[in-house]
Image 1 (cartoon, one colour):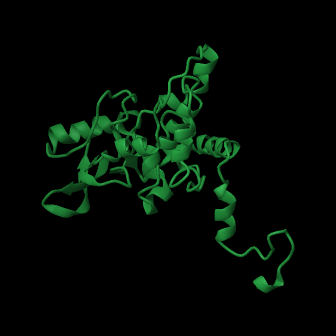
Image 2 (cartoon, one colour; image 1 turned 180 degrees about the vertical axis):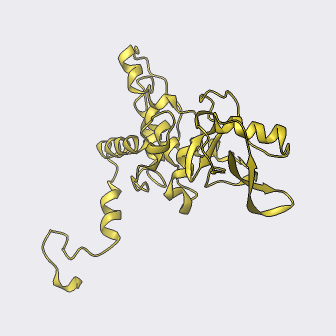
Image 3 (cartoon, helix red, strand yellow; image 1 turned 30 degrees about the vertical axis):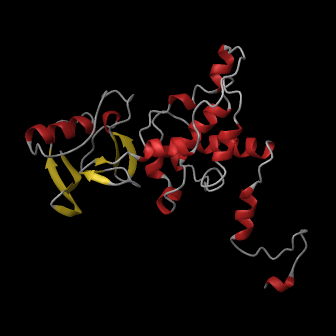
Length: 245
């Protein structure tokens, strides 16, 4: 079975694809290990738990973000590193921005409350707490491609996790941090939701953060962005404006 892997070496600034014949037909991760041990020990990739928990083996398979350890190999699969970040070597990318976006989104506990937490309270943030930081959502995000300051799906999902956490006594700093280059910049395309291996729904999380922001007095910038893109032909009061044409 043939597999094509995008390569990048220090001596070669350009990316290129290299094809290998592999016998292992279970997971792509097993195939990568076979390539490294039997064909080219210089192949670089990340892996950890090999069970879909750590998220370190995130790659793109035929243009779609996947976990190598959970994805079955098919003939002529094209393997590439995740997008929107610097490729260090082959399938290994720089993940330094993880800490930056979490800090910029204030996605952590600000002030501990004295409220008693129930099992139902825990369920409110259970899904968002399952993020494994695999970066698949960042790689699939079209906004991050054009705006490197965009906080991105997983940081915003993490922000909602703390905004809804009953242990958080003051969610205001987090809501404040996600107004610019955050929830209003998202196009709600849903790519992040589609590729998430943990079945988290960042798109819905961002919509919930928009609602909570408006409820807390922040401006709804989604309509401003919508109306600012083109002239609708109507005045501010809903009447037709012939001068717009």
